[in-house]
Image (tube, rainbow, N blue to C red; front, side):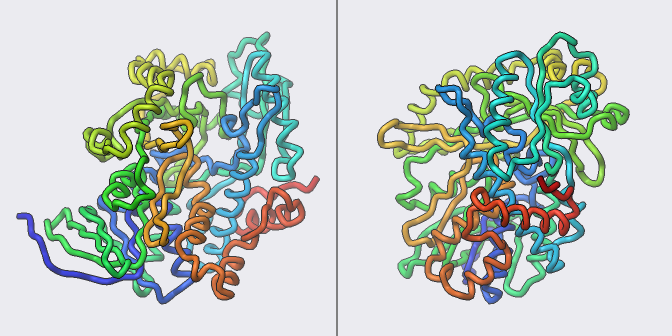
Length: 503
């Protein structure tokens, strides 16, 4: 029976969605102001069940060491490194924050959520080898990438990644780069650990199986949201001074319901994915790296192919993919009507414009959906020439919703990345988009704090605490080699990671 209660509660902060973003923001806010009251609502029955789940994300610990899509080749043949440096800086901030939490006994032993593993880029063909060589030269000019090693020596590559080199054409031109200080992050385990601690703190309530039905701004500037308990059918109203929508693919519909002007004109383009999961222990043992290649023409960035060693639930796994696909769902557990229901009068033109401009992407996704098992095996064989179909099984990955923005000049633009959309008064904010999301959660939430807590973030108390949690706060690590080296060494020791070698 559907029961509609008239109960009304008050809290300082509401977090919608129990993923890595809400966990990060919740912990930050309680550290900055222990007296804050927080209510967290999640539509599923557990934390980190969608985009933050280990099987639903890449788990690379994106630091731009191996992801070629962060370093595009420009028309003049040069390599753009700006985005790669920013992502590397952001991941260092995440490691600093996690180190702080480990030292405060807020998080369990680091190997439960982060481990060292080499990050590699691998290419073949004369043109791609030349690109990788130039990329290495461009990136190693910055101290954050100084340890990156480049090689075209097949014996060296055989030692680095035997599975990738076994059975390969000896006359094929190949090259790879390697960063020993790469990481594998289980964001599902990290998110759950953060929430397990957070829910024991005074003033924090974590409520699963709760759907957010409505968001409405009160006359006094606070927000009233109505939530429904999916198990009992009961609903209640909760008033809050600040609301964060961190619901992954579910954020866009909730942002639309809020009605804030800043949210108008945004659309979403859903992209699904699949992995090939190795089921042969002997094959799994032979590979110990994350090996990224170049994406196919028209492929979205989160579909960059990689042969990926992972630790999931204490077990070593080997994945290949992801293979992109198309679904009208905005969440893995969502509805096929999600895309249609997200179309409004204020975003239909940007969405149409973005669709017309990205016809190659649409064709690519349709082709991916139509792939046969043999097609997927052939794609795998480009990275693992000796692959056999019986050693691999298909695993469904997470659902991503890419941002479509209304650009005044270009019209609808499809963005690959993350975007914080906030009200002018800072009373509500939503996170849209995908990769490299989880890895840069700390820097994303720092940006949100600057936008939404303007009256507090510059106080001596908050500034002092932020610098305690993230020692590089307010400084650009990409421009300060001494500080970057010092903090990278310190966080590596606290998190039990490979300590960078001084050059």
